[in-house]
Length: 304
Image 1 (cartoon, rainbow, N blue to C red):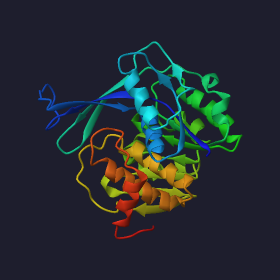
Image 2 (image 1 turned 90 degrees about the vertical axis):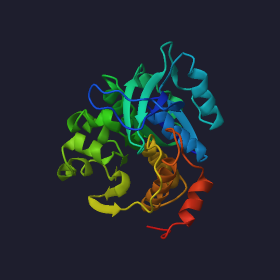
Image 3 (image 1 turned 180 degrees about the vertical axis):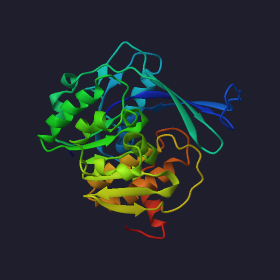
């Protein structure tokens, strides 16, 4: 089975549950504290691992009391992290406030220390996809672009899940990496941060052949070769925590392609995975393939 390599952050997520977010200078009682493994790359890798894919993680793994928790989670999902760069710094942390409606606010501590040379030659071998995710690091776009260029020359497909961090860099800064991307997965808000408005998306569609915009309750917009498809959410669920739903979508989509689905079928599979994920707490609430397929079988339409 060919590999999928996920590059980016591995975090400890501290989930703080509140009834509502504070106004300026306000105070709010924290009802519950939960601790989960997280990070965009870690979440996508975990989702792919749960769906039985041959998945590798590349990024930094820190040294603190939470390291064993992070690695045990990877071990349980058969994620290979042997090529990750270990550091003596603390692991990355995200403090996530979640209100009673499942909306969230994120505050991050980020440490990143690797170069393109740290990305082992072994990670290019027998690899189908490399999935890039956001990091706070001054030269990260240059590092990612160097890895992507080498990967593309070997026929590896490139996917990018930008997150707010990369979207705030704006289009010209991200453009060198986008030029190598086969798949791009921003949220609607991230598109607006990146190019100002949806009226300017031709900047992206001219570079990326498969551009998939996640729109929350409104579903997905899929642009392929400049053709737009609007795909509504197939059903409603009771949202508990939307943390990691976008990562779940990306993992479900790539897993779908690896299973031989068309892109629209993979989107449908990924949407159902993401919907199930928001009915639970934590960024790694990826359902199993059996749960997703059962959820699909209950839908009023089976194919799109």
